[in-house]
Amino acid sequence: MIKATVNGGQPFEITPAGPGAGNVECNGKQVSWSAEALPSDGFSILMDGKSFVAQVVKIDRDTKTVSLQINQALYDVALEEPMDRLLASMGISEASSRKINEIRAPMPGMVLKVLVTPGQAIQKGDPVLILEAMKMENVFKAAADAVVKEIKVSERTAVEKGEVLIVLE
Image 1 (cartoon, rainbow, N blue to C red):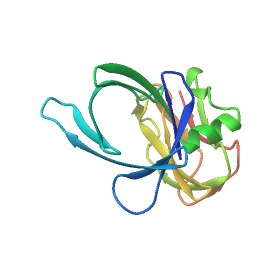
Image 2: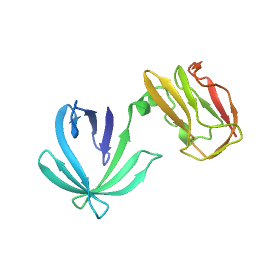
Image 3: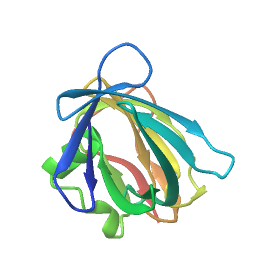
Image 4: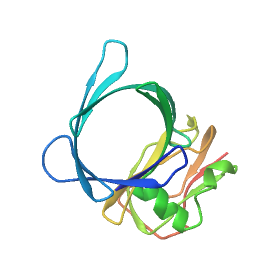
């Protein structure tokens, strides 16, 4: 389930509604929709029999927000995924605003893949490690530009909550 908050209002809970393209549930109500790209870089959207023209104005991957212009009105949409809620419940939702020298496991899990090597320069947003936890694959990304100093884990090993996975400098 993804939560989408439009212009700071009440959040919408969006989940797949089962088989079939274009079917989702929004706040428990099934919604049928389709979208087609337009030559003008916009989208033509048909939702529950109503037609809309949408243009992506801005995407901010760091804050997970999207600004959309739909039928001449501007909408700022903040997206929250299940992993965001889990991290927030563990008190580490603001980790990206601080300088991080270590990447730690937010929960117990299994390291599936290490995507970096010691000495490698990484940029903010680069994937560094994949951890399987709670039957989900979670891709850890660099919170800031850094250099990988040390990798403390190896692939296919179990880790505990709070364990240091990668040291950055």
